[in-house]
Image (cartoon, rainbow, N blue to C red; front, side, top):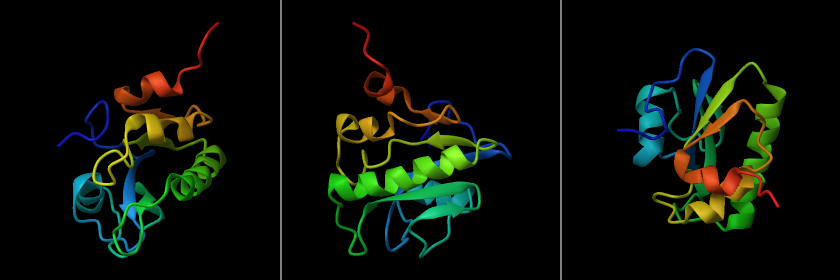
Length: 132
């Protein structure tokens, strides 16, 4: 199953970034892949876990969170990425699968991402600077 643009398993300094639920029940989609292959911890719904990083898009009851709350967690992730320039973050299309948001809703939250973050091709139009 491919969750990132190149479909490759992260190397030693790479981190698989996925959408999670606050309960940390990583049972489907990219969250399941993170648990099975990248060290995501069951019952841990946020932050660095092994070679993965969870950004909540659903609450403890597995209900989709509001965009503003997701943005809060994205901001924390971006600060973490800036503070860890030696790491490369392979960001999946968080919130655009089971949470039900569209790329245009979530991708712009990552506009200020540092250069050590890479994204799925579907997000490219929402992350590029517009030229006049």
